[in-house]
Length: 268
Image (cartoon, rainbow, N blue to C red; front, side):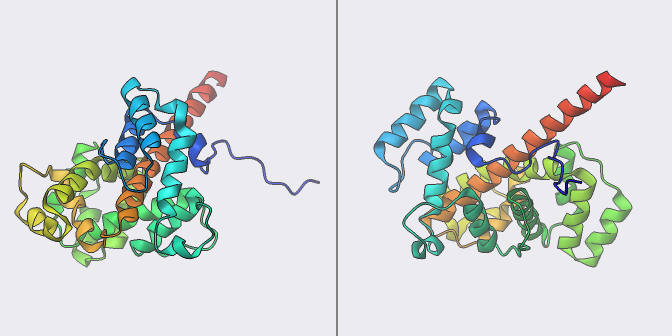
């Protein structure tokens, strides 16, 4: 009798280059903006790589260079202080995600998959963001994403002040897809604010809810950036990139689940 485990119906741990082949044009364009600093370029990005990415972005053919995009993301990860003491070769995406997790204070269990690490990162960003926020501020985020919450349970957890427990409950109530979408949707406004006012001043901007710079979602999620030291150039790239990739993975998992359910219905 074989002791081998059956293959999962949906592969949640696709390698980065394979996962990016399932991403939408918009999702890949968001990653291209992170890699190229919206076309301005980065010191560790070669001019030829920048030109190639920007040209494919213009032609909406970024799928054709998904291995190159994956390569650049991992290469940026290789520029972190942690990786400076590793071998000269670039780290894997799993290592990059692990470095991001450690950077923002996530405790990752030894048997975690890359999907698990990404989910833990999303949870940690939300946990940090929700501290000190009102019920109305948090509920507004989920109303945008059309996720109905049990008000009594929500208020009970919020009063206890255990933000991590609240986030875990929200994860079970709304699912990882919704929460990854929520964090991802706040990423661009948050980073734009950081670029305009600088990381030291972003806290003041968030506190005043400057309407010209912030939308309601970004105003809450951006609170996390105040607590993370993003002075190192690598983490300014790898943290938003991993969040985007987590969102791409959850989108892929949802699409594959829906596809499987549709095929199953045909058999009934």
